Structures are given as C-alpha cells and as structure tokens.
Image (cartoon, rainbow, N blue to C red; front, side, top):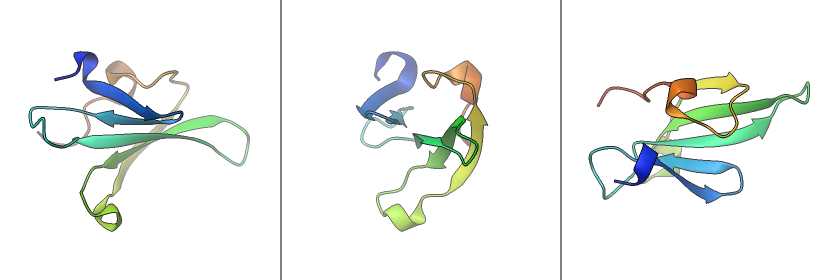
Length: 75
C-alpha cells in the first residue's frame, strides 16, 4: 500500500488506498464552493463512475488527510 493510503492522481484529486491493492477504496475531489471556500468531497470508488457515491465533505483540509476526512466507509 502507498504510505498514508493517499495517492494524488490529478492536481485536485486523490485516491484512497486500503487493503485491496487492485483498486481504490475512495476518491477525494477538491472543489471550490459558491462562496469561494475550498471543499473536499469524499466519494466511494467504483469502476463504473455512475456507481460512485458521495459519502462526505469537509472544508479546511490541505492536503486531504486521514485525520481530516476520517475513514471512508466500512472496510
């Protein structure tokens, strides 16, 4: 597993790796909301993009970290 479980794949996109090394557990997207604040959306990962679901969001974390976002979903 990648140290820390986070791999940055784009400027504002990270994948969260867990036990299964063949695919991510979740995807984190940094976005800017309508007030101009940065937010981080936590999405479950699925091979089919339409099957991905938002499971949380937070603001004020740079870069995303496990303490900031918590553990994404059940293991």
